[in-house]
Length: 450
DNA sequence: ATCGGCTCGCGCAA
DNA sequence: TGCGCGAAGCCGAT
Image (cartoon, rainbow, N blue to C red; front, side):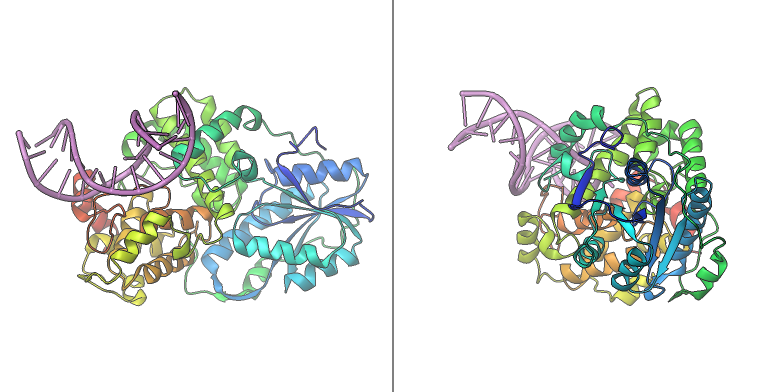
């Protein structure tokens, strides 16, 4: 196994010898078949011990905080996962209910010998994994299948900014930015009693928020992600460097939802990018894809306060505290923000882009979050409002990139101090005039403010 | 239109 | 301990 997957990528969460009838990959963050180091490691281990390999995904089923926009995307992707795994003689199981009940039950019913899982730095996943590990006795291995350089290998601490993590990642890329081994048709078969899952029924049975509707303009799944990547590489990356901060420019990769749901591996995207001639476009995209994204995982992994005020850098907390009682020109409730009813038509357009399209342009996300800070009664409320809206409407919500981007905008994480002003203190300010000089504001507003 | 200053702390050279 | 330098911006001076 160690010859196939770098030992740096794999952590032993619970030691032990695999006594049982199958190896289980508990799929969490990386919901795909190809280019998945956790699945590759699980298969190598299963073959080494001459055991069948199973994959499971757990969900609660009754979860009003989730919505059909995100769950629809996720489950339609999982249907493709199920289909592709079957062809490799790897059965896929959906486990519904309380994780602490259904997972140990599944392990015991099927005499699972060992568990592999992928990695997320988010608290909800880490707590869940820890609770399950505490309840079971079989060996557990965790594989960072999301970062190109495993988060714990890149650095052993929270990095201060992009410039401090950049050389660390680049120095390790030769070891980690390598081609994936191919998944094999699994040689040890499992009597699959889970033949034909009714995926439409799974979706219908979900007790979740259905007011945030599914999207038509983005199709989920591994195949679609590869299509988008191919199209971006061959046609659309050409003007990336110059135009990426123009929200009217439509030639963007749109890969972030697929990266968030694990439908495509960042390493696959990076492998394709480095095949291109190195120029300002490929360099700028690589910076966003690799450095900025892996910096987000680093932040969430080493700072458990990634979604609250306490997680901001000292200078950011200090300056925001000093300006806590500054008079706000406008103060809006979360409901006013959510319904896009502020006085600022540019901000409202960004909010509508998010609620209608499920994906706000990267540049507007900064402006959007900074204005929430400006027009909220305090930084804590602003942070909470921004995170809740992001997690609810964005297809790439509930992702380290979202928490980090918002903490950058509101708390100065990974940024430096700037000229002091009311409310913001030394947090970098952005305003309407800046946008006006950078892109056609009218066009953007007309697109979303119908 | 272009440019420098604003401001902080990391990381490296001593 | 000192110092160079980052960095997805704003603003006023030229």
